[in-house]
Image (cartoon, each protein chain N blue to C red):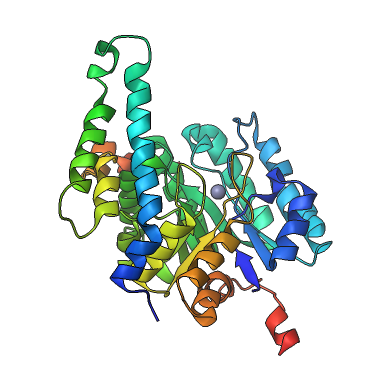
Length: 90
Length: 274
Ligand SMILES: [Zn+2]
């Protein structure tokens, strides 16, 4: 018998709380560290983290997949033409 | 529970790990050829590596009652050096006939470059000509989604390739669907930080079912746990999944995939206890 929503929630609530606290403490650690904010301002990963947190804070059907895609390079369906793989036989 | 680890780099593990695997219920491992942590200098280095995989490791495993199988190839990282990669591809047929060799792997992409794609296609061609199984490494982290889609494009482009003879490894939440929908086998890798946890692997089983899905440890020289499959078994049990369901994923599925290899020989420990 699969667990009910309530049972899954009870089982994982403390783990989820703990992981959110871990994330919060890491953000504090970065803030506390020496150096100026300028060093991080242009790092694209900051924007990715922000978008991931926004996804978590909204209603979604597939959080894990969406967050994976935020941290992924995009796929270009025309990549084979751009690589010109036809001209490479050994 | 008896299980098979379909992806474990035993050359980088100590003999004690074989003993721990045996005690944990592991009856067979399959070891794909991979990057050794540094780029090798010549094709001869690979020849020695393939001898290690086909001669030495099966003996070391047998001391603990574990059957050792392997795969040979030039890995995606070293494929960036196209001329060296072609020298290595030329020696692969010497090893494809070895009794413990299951096919060509783990081939794939690493940074999704043109050179990697060229060498991937040449090894797919080799596998098709020799009618071998293929084990595919998909890239990590930000390269995984793009690289997995590119790999599926290339496999689809070769009409000789039958999806049921290919295992797409290291799938995660954003790539598993593409591989399963096209009929491939998939592997979920339980590896700290960069890949998947036992909990998330169990989640994917709950979302996608048990057909053509396997779980592996990809134990290697990095921070990894060669016994990680047992963590998955435990997680599934804690969630109330049946022993039958779990056994399908960790034992019957790898068995079904590997047994398509004509050299596959395996005596089931389950038959002995029945
Ligand atoms: Zn591997």
